Length: 130
Image 1: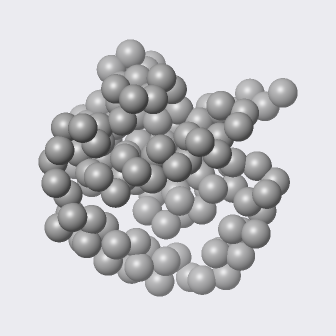
Image 2: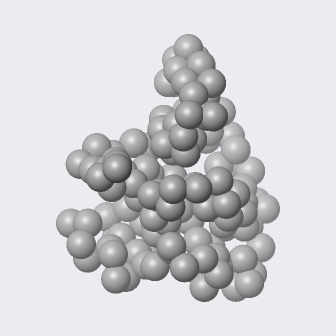
């Protein structure tokens, strides 16, 4: 039984980010990953980037995405090939997608999955992280 703590911080006001979280939660068959809005952690909210926490290790941008996918299980091992690409290139691509997502953001309250997914519960868990 895996005792690791997996937390993904995402922008809950972003349609692309919330869609991504829905996709991840459907594939988290072991229900190990907890999703929290970036906005639930004041220290992270200003970063406006995906953050993935595994126990006391924190990962950002493209590395966060790779680590998150790898945490979904053995069927995602192939994602490790992404590490062949240097981080500055992966993060450059991540930044381009992030800039695009900000233009797509429709600020529609209906895209906030905090209300739709029971594993995602903001304030209750944000305090326990510090």
